[in-house]
Amino acid sequence: MINKREFYINGKWVLPIVKKDFQVINPSTEEAYAIISLGSKKDLNLAVKKAKEAFLTWSQVSKKNKIILLENLLNIYKKKWNDISQTISEEMGAPLDWSSSAQTSSGFDHINDFIKRLKHFEFETKFNKDSNNYIVYEPIGVCGLITPWNWPINQIALKVIPALATGCTMILKPSEIAPLSGMLFAEIIHEAGFPPGVFNLINGDGKGVGTDLSSHSDIDMISFTGSTRAGKLISKNAANTIKRVCLELGGKGGNIVFSDSHPDAVREGVRNIMSNSGQSCDAPTRMLVEKSIYKRAIKEAADEANKIKVDIASKNGDHIGPVVSKTQYDKIIDLINSGINEGATLVAGGPEKPNGLEKGYFVKPTIFTDVTNGMRIAKEEIFGPVLSIIPFEDEDEAISIVNDTSYGLGNYVQTQDKEKAKRVARKFRSGGVYINGNSAESGTPFGGYRQSGNGREGGNWGLEEYLEIKTICGWE
Image (tube, rainbow, N blue to C red; front, side, top):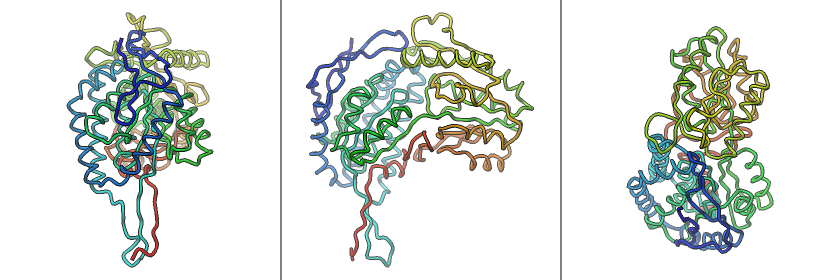
């Protein structure tokens, strides 16, 4: 059993003030393999106090010196690549190859891009050449950063690095379900040489440390990635102190496949949703298929789903692993059963476990057809390897169905007609649109509309989330 009970506060690993153990479960085996501590209000108050003290000096550190430290961090991260990949694989069930090529690489790419952005970011500028007004971007203060289990290092990099780059200090609370990659990241921060108190880590759950962070009077900003339900609670907790709240929440992405799409559009859509075992907030979980190719699409989707292998995370190769926890597994199976009960047609997968994988939180790649947008499987975020296929008559109907949701994170369109693709993209109510399988480049803004959240992460937009804007009149 791995002992990871300590928190990282003020540049040191310290035991919790109030002892409360929590077991970390390997989702491939359903067995505990590590013990962490869940923090208390006393632990958090200590971390906030140290972060507040450190802000006085860190906020004044030059851009040049911050870049040196961030480049140290990037080099150490690269050296620990295999350790990070192994840790993520064990804690959240990502197959080793996928953990390295997608999970660990995403963190590296974000760190690298933020360093480039910081080098060119202007923190001070005249309002215009004839003005005596001066605009200054200043760090917002002490930040509470709450990250999820599904893309742990990706989200840590998207929050911690811009906070460091802009001169903020912080307390990171990684998900208690997958906390060890966050603790490894804290070790990298320490080795890179960041001053004590600038970065602090406390493990805890949402109702404990999460609630205390979002309501703490000395926390100036909360950045949270997770469920819409939790995002609403965080917003309410933060309201009394009028702190900035940046939320990246759930999604129910639509993928419109027109009859003139490229030949592999359906198969690629299936692969997209099944990657990371369906545990991505911007996954295209509703596939809308033009009726003239609907029957063909069903056959292709079912065939592709049946080709996808499911196996334990510790194995190399092209397969998907388990979902992260029993709670998540039970939710997914309940929604699969609701799809069957509401009259959708099950053409691949189902609620039974894959053969030979009776132990572990494994879910078969599942495809439903004849789905209507009023069914639970079309409305609720399943966060598992489950795809709903919906037929449509024409472009307007397809756009209407896609936008008929409370979410608005990422939507997709497949067509070889470039003008149609652009027309549809403009009509989507979502923070991101992916045309013909093209992905977002590092440094582009990521975030959602409506109940998918507010604010943006990545690039200059990600830096600006952690900055206040000051106007100084009479500068010259």
